[in-house]
Length: 243
Image 1 (cartoon, rainbow, N blue to C red):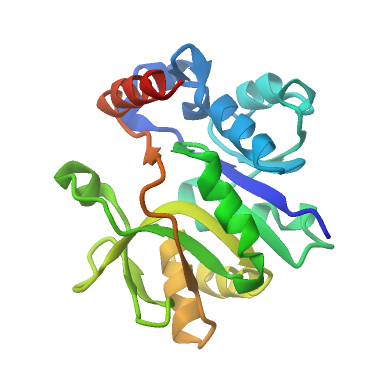
Image 2: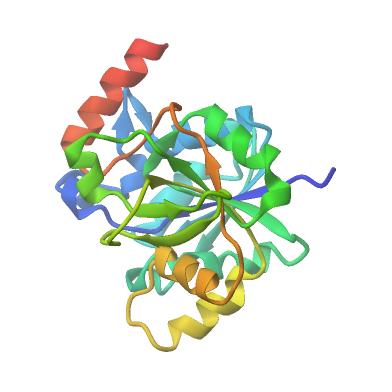
């Protein structure tokens, strides 16, 4: 079986974690003494990922120096700088394309999301359904919902709408995708008309074009995005209680 590579978007600045992120990039913010991206790489390795493409942007030289070739994490790492990282996270997928020339499918996740190994495993086990997005039906916390990208999943398990402010929804985006090469021409086409392009906009366009986006239900498994100091404190508390 062909091994699936992971693309990790690690390009953003993380302004809400300032002043820390004035000194180092957001993926190096520590959770229980360990950089955020280190948690993510260990999870990917434990789920069977052997090769990661990490798309950098803000303070990329600092992140690249920390990551090295990936040997200290037990994975092979390629760092790829996205000069357009301020124009939205979808541009970082395009930046990774040169490392995916022989790959029909790839896992996509975010450097500011903590996710359980079970979520990555579920995505990989369902690779035949790609493109897919791991979704959670059980988020009820009002603060997390305010930040979340919502999705509307139909009775057949396919996503019919996606966005932060869609009128009807029944699950939320966990930030873990398993995509195929159909995403690249969509990003290229939309980049010419948008000053800032989000992944959710590209997913919405794929759905409009008739490319099914499957919802991989991972409800009940741990995941959270890290945007604020409150998120850091909560993540530390959760991880301490589970280890």
